[in-house]
Figure 1 (tube, rainbow, N blue to C red):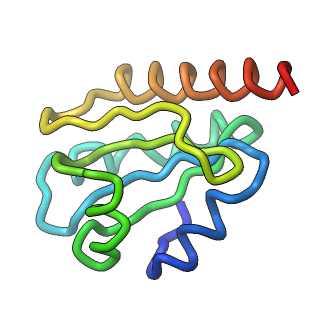
Figure 2 (cartoon, rainbow, N blue to C red; figure 1 turned 90 degrees about the vertical axis):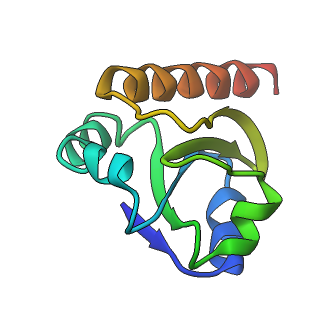
Length: 116
């Protein structure tokens, strides 16, 4: 997962026509570390559908604030710079919940692409 270090990098990554999902997290977040063991496999399984990027909420605080990210880990899907769907709350996320969100994000993205 590519680590985003600046707002400019974030804006560039979400600007493309593909599906990009931003994963918001922090080093001190236990629930963020809970997902670490399985996220590489989840990412690999969906590499043809979605690009995952990682944002530390403290390092790139401006983006987190603008998007009203209050709980972590949180997931926000983008295409062409526009937010499509989000999975943002303060609860621990299971692998199944994350996979379901990524599938839903891919479905929303393909529906929007089909309309254009």
